[in-house]
Amino acid sequence: MVDIDAAIGYVVAHGDPVERARLSYLRTGQRPDPHVLDRIVEGQTESGGWPASTDGAVSSIDATCFRLNELDDLGGLHGEPVDRALSWLATVQRADGTWQEAEELAAEAPAWAMPGDPEATLYLTTVAGFWMTLAEYEAHPNFDVPARHGRTLGAAATWVVHQIRPDGTWPSFLAAGWHAAGLLYGQQYFYESARVQLVLGDRLPDMAPADVASMAAALRRVNLGDDWLLQSARKRLGETQRTDGGWDSAEGPIFDVNTTLTVLRACR
Image 1 (cartoon, helix red, strand yellow):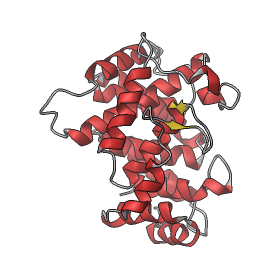
Image 2 (tube, one colour):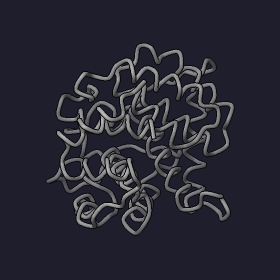
Image 3 (cartoon, rainbow, N blue to C red):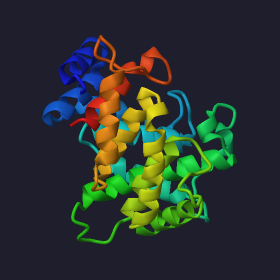
Image 4 (cartoon, rainbow, N blue to C red):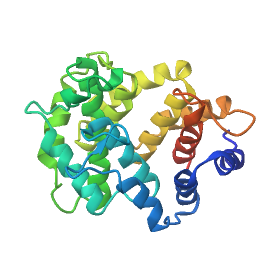
């Protein structure tokens, strides 16, 4: 099993102020000081998105979803900055229901966000749709009013459904799988979501710890019901925890604290 105390100690010892604030919220639900949220929000562009780099001027879909993830860990997936981000995402959705990064970002975009690339298009569409789904649920957990971005999410889910192969696999990056599962479940494509989950279960033994953590955190967050996959993921995380309490990031040691926080989010 995951050693929660050791993981907490690792974040306390190595995390920056925002990461430690995320830890406090994940542990106790304590809201961060306003300046912690301000550090995230201050990078938001006038359009409502976040740029890919601190000195960038063009909003990035990938970066915006990353910031929504951070705000979610701080209990802040609501309010004016989030509403602006969601409105921007809805505005830049393409006519076919997909999302792609702006062409101006091609020179600096990673493979999973490369403008015009089919695999990147599927990945970004699932990620943007996933975070919009979570934000809608946060605003209306009982679905007692129509979703603010219901048409946007419906178009995204319909397009994603048609990308899922008969065997449940998808022509994109691994992370597109668990984001697709959440988006499709939220849009009531329960059968298609379940097929994707079965494939993720088959791939679990070969996943890197960071991928297992991200998948488990996403599945837990959308409350898919039967948690067999989440239980298997938590078992795998217990097997891959380091002796210092942390986990290896796929992007290098500088992101190990973020991966460890993701594990804690998955095990809340």
